[in-house]
Image 1 (cartoon, rainbow, N blue to C red):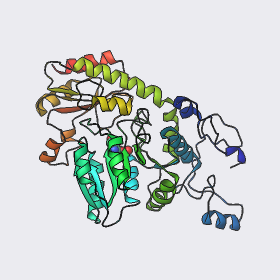
Image 2 (spheres, rainbow, N blue to C red):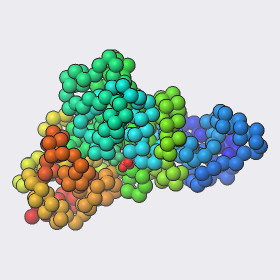
Image 3 (cartoon, rainbow, N blue to C red):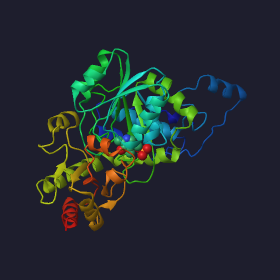
Image 4 (cartoon, protein in one colour):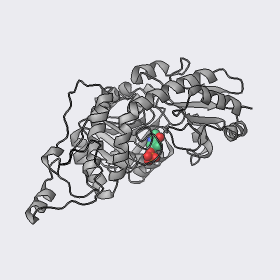
Length: 398
Ligand SMILES: *Cc1c(COP(=O)(O)O)cnc(C)c1O
């Protein structure tokens, strides 16, 4: 790397959309326009002494091995930290490597963690894993601040929640929970996938650590797995990085390069998707054959005001309840534009039946508590025309 590779500094007053296109680019001696893909796992040293010095104390632009860091991955990390308003970020192989890394990197036996109950199935698995190693986990209804208040203790080490839950779209009050956690010095770790980095104000509201599955809206076209942990430099480099680099959770440089490209268009995409989601939810609300339409951007959503305050929008996900598994399956099988799949944040709209797929592992009792009824469908709104999506959904009701 020549000294040209020093990341480009941008005026901090520039709009996030501008920063998401330019921030953190490290140009090589060739002055390439597009972010370079450094598809290399290793780096050569000029001398044995240089190798020794780098292992002893690598500078911010010195690399050792792609499991530790790579210039392309670092560009993605810098751009994510900039976007999220944190000092630093570490890019991971998947969203789950980010969730696992963000919690495992500091937890030890005897620690107490309070978590919202309404979580993605794999996030629940990670918390079960922590419990297996002697961490005490207390689950609460994330929308009820009184339950957080009752569960958080003077010795609570961290709180964890999805700011908008998967799949029932409950919104957790980040500022409210953060205030309770702060009072006892507990770390606030937020899985912000459904809010997206576009509608995220998590750090501003008091989150210490924000994790994303980049697989979703950051890639935006359902191609690559990836994740990222955003937080203070001390947390990212002294806690998350050692854990992830030694346990193999780092992102592939190729996937980081894809994510960097995704970031350039993310704001445009996500705003268009959220606009279409609002149109779909509005059109379907009150539609015969639907028991319920859940969308944080609709005024009847129980946390509508909070969603507006916290995110400034309702996001790209809508949930609808058709009353029974039979009705839900029949509608899914008649859809032509909505694809039956389990990803989200894709350019293609996706329909998911959580009870039989993403949340199948949970007991019926737990599913009931989380609002995952047998008729619930999760819709990830893509980049198609909203009118076409509404027509496809209506036609599917038969
Ligand atoms: C998808 C998802 C994850 C996991 O991300 P992967 O990239 O699939 O590992 C974690 N949390 C939430 C809320 C998700 O939707």
